[in-house]
Image 1 (cartoon, rainbow, N blue to C red):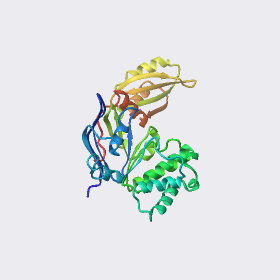
Image 2 (image 1 turned 60 degrees about the horizontal axis):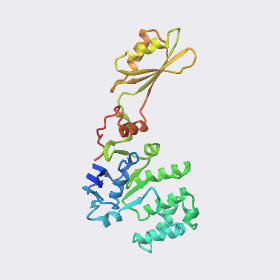
Image 3 (image 1 turned 90 degrees about the vertical axis):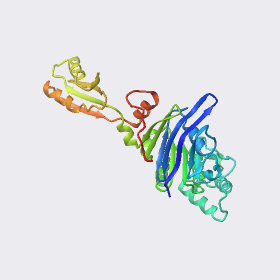
Image 4 (image 1 turned 90 degrees about the horizontal axis):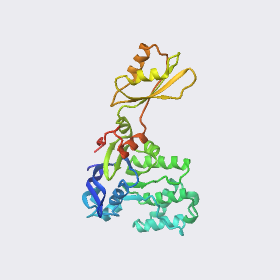
Length: 328
């Protein structure tokens, strides 16, 4: 039996003359925690709503756990747990009452659901507030209640939209740990704007922009796609004008730009941007030797996930928008 849990092929969604999702294709396997990223209006929420059977696609197809989201939507819904960004919960119920209601709506066995409610309440940190009205809870605890209802029926696939919204730092760490634990056995799609959370939690990332898929790969692979890089160079001044050093550094092969930075007394500091995939460490060191500069610092700054996201979603040419293939 295939371990592919989600198959999306040429998925397209139009709202009148506006195309929100444009020919998106990807697969997600069992045991993957997939970060689904994109700026506001990119099409990620529309894609998740199609996968959870809230919307039907204009073109293309999507299968969840082997079932078509259009023709077999009830089977799909039985196998997914969904936490929207705005957690839909009844505030006039206690936590236990709401989870009992969710279990009933899911058609869970009345004999086993109380034990499952207690188990999932503990896992989501709700044991101390089980008898409180949902409306009396903080936003962070309401978010935990929403996560508990998504996990209650032990689904094969979890789709989570901003699951740590409103949580304090300790709660965020706990929920991240829980998501990673769940991801060892199940499939998780996590949508968030908190990129360090993606770095800490996800084994693979999809980035969508303007309705199109622009990147697919591990966090490490996407960071490695950053062409060139930035270097910080600090040399002892020794009476040499910083403009003269800058001009020599700017003239090195593979340097796209060199600018002067503020530096401590007796030193000159520079930031160099590399063109294409050039490694500037050796040319910089050789220039220091040839010009008798005392090299105090040479640092290559690696691209962050924030850099990758910004470049792919704002049209910055420093990253090519071709897709790095992840697991398929």
